Length: 434
Image 1 (tube, rainbow, N blue to C red):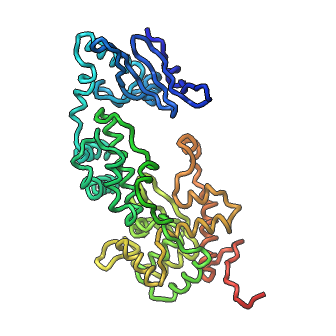
Image 2 (cartoon, rainbow, N blue to C red):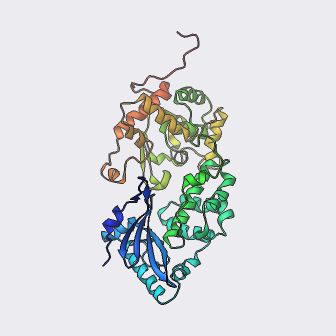
């Protein structure tokens, strides 16, 4: 019977040296197996055996605390069926079993390290691991996410990493892969970096890799400084009323109407372009967005429509033809993503359509402080709180969100708003004003 328990492993801490600094702590389980706790807090299993009459320490893998807890409470093991020699993250029982097998090999006069690494030598290339990870994980993703995962890695990671084995890829290799797009495509490079990490984590779970996943901070130190920013450029909300009024006076084309509808509703461009009249309840003044047009395509979302939003819809489409898509492209289908951006550029603005969400959120924080922050976040269909909090807190805050959007509509388009509001539109003060 070993000396360690799952609780002892979980609670083990680094040691302390004479100078007070953290040092390695080694906790014996017996029969040569030890838990090594490093100053960083990392925990690894180490086996000491006699090889050719000399003591030798053999690393078995890191401590898998997540599965340690799951197995302690009878949960399913996601690595069931994978050889222990290929696993590099082990529970206490697995470390004992692996140590027992390697001790027998050492006593038989063979090299336990060669046996440990024999199965690992079949590690696939990064390109193959990308395809394997995609096949295994895509069931939990939307089609769009699955396609983006595969195409982004094939375009920006595989040219440099594709031929390398996943157990040999280090920080320097990833830096070389990211360097060509590091400064020119900062949004894409963050996605690619995260997806490379997903593939390497998948490879480690399969026993194809033993090293830890390179830290994002470590990667940044090997690359040039990116330009400040990275967020979607947003129109300052005090400028929104003048912008809307100028656009309202022009011909209300589909792209211009969609752009203004995005401004008034705070929804994403994709949802606006896919909006249909069947989703609109003008009597209840509500836009019922199905999950299929929302980000992630998992949750539906209801958006209260302000007087201004209703007036926009009514002006754009005569009552007798209100069916199907609201904003129709030239070819009869949905507008393209660039059509809304083009409308914004023709207005002389260099912000993004997504930035209207920031305009709305900034206004809500400053002009409507009596509305709780989580209501404003819910208005943007953002997830708020931990998994436990979301499980118990399922309020939709419909009436408070309605007040928020009506206030926003009255601020942006006071000449189309009939509801009373406690929001005073911000106006520019002339240079000569006192």
